[in-house]
Amino acid sequence: MPILPHELDARAEFLKDLIHRTGLKARQLFETRKPGRYTLKGHQDFLTEADTFIEQEIRVAIAQRFADDAFVGEESSDEQSGGRANGTATWVVDPIDGTANYARGIPHFCICIAFIDRGKTQLGAIFNPCTDELYFTRRGKGAYKNNEPIHVATTDDFTHATIEMGWSTRTELQTYLNAQAALLSHGANVRRGASGALALAWVAEGRIDGYLEHHMHPWDSLAGLLLVREAGGVTRPYLSLPGTLNTGGAVLAAAPHIADALTHYSQLEELEIA
Image (tube, rainbow, N blue to C red):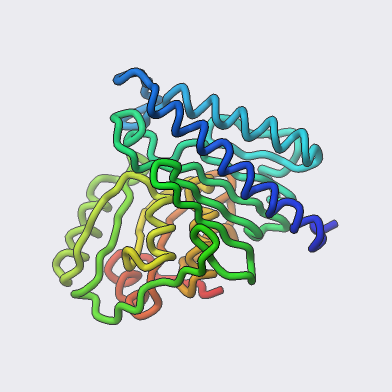
């Protein structure tokens, strides 16, 4: 059975409280951490004590309130629930997105949580506890920052656009460099902030005009993609494509007037407007 409207209401209110509460805990851990205390899961793939601690806090809270819901996290997943396979009543969580920033003392990171049901993202929340910016969206209900409506930029000239690009070792370096060169050669400003979830939130509120990453995990991207669409932006298909809940995929989000150009220059051709 799909989640009913009143059941989604309950999850929406729970999500706002949960992400704010755990975000404040993440900020406390950030402010009291010992510099250099992190490990590497792979090349430039950081892990801190806060990642596992915050994810466990979130997972326990969800299990206590919504015991039948499934859980997919960056550090752990509930494989036996079936949610990872079909996206029914599933919470998708990144406890710290921007871990490299966090580990190096840079206050540009966030907690990112999405709730999906029947293969569609229904709720999304992104919280940067260091700036006290809480982004929230519900399918069909708009996009908000700290309870105020937000909208994507109206930029209509690509030479005026600022685009953020994400990179990881999951993408061949030359693919990243080719896309970056194409954007720069066509006049855009290109930046990298090292938190894909916050970049999507910034697209949604018009701070930047687009975000591009050739491979992004669902826990980094689902909340932000819904946020951008609800803020009037354009996104590339993601969750509707085969396997992305398990393996991730390419992400593109943009203000509508530059979306076609960004798609063409990045060689990601298919768009979805929702």
